[in-house]
Length: 113
Length: 113
Image (tube, rainbow over all chains, first blue to last red; front, side, top):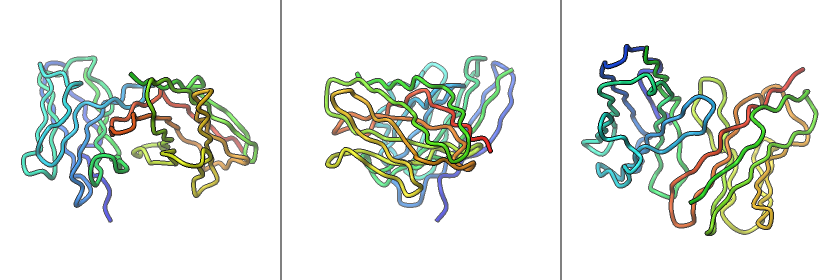
C-alpha cells in the first residue's frame, strides 16, 4: 500500500514568488493534516481537513497561506508571496479518521532566497 | 495548553550501548503520549504510544517507554542500540478527546560503531 505522497520533495524560490505543495493521502483516509517543521523544531499543525472541510485552520497564516482539498482526497498548500522565514519543511499527514494514527509523508523542503 | 520538552537535542552513543531519550510534558488534562522516529529524508513514523492501561509500552524494534504521571515524563529507552537506530526522535502529546499533536523539538540519536 502506498504511503502519503508529497511533491515536490525540494523547492527553491526567490522571495515574493508563489509556491505550491501537493499531497496525496493514503487511500481511504478521510483526515488530512499539513504541518510546518522549522529547522531544529518539531512539526506544528497548520491545518486539518475532515474530507473536504477545513476543521482546524487556526494556525494557518491566512494573509499569505491558503490550502484546499476540493474533492476530499488530495490537497494543495500555497504560499503567496513567499518570505525568507517560510524556509522550512512542509509535512502532510493523513489518518483514517480523526483520533487514528497519523501517517506522514516525506515532506517538501522549501528554501526561499 | 500542552507542551513537550526534549532537553537533549543530540545523544551520541556507541553501538550495543543502552540509551535513554528524555521527554517531559505539561498539561492540565489527561493526555495521550507518542514517540515518532524520523529517518533521514523520510517522514515521521509512529514508534510507540501510550493511550491507557499499562504504563510501559513497547515497540517491535526493542524500544520501550514508560508513562510516569507523577513526574510527567515519557522517556524512551533501548537496552542495546544498533547503527540503524540513528535518526531523529520526536516526543508528542495530545489532549484526550482531541487529535491535535504537540511535538517536542526532537532528539537526534547518533549511533557510532
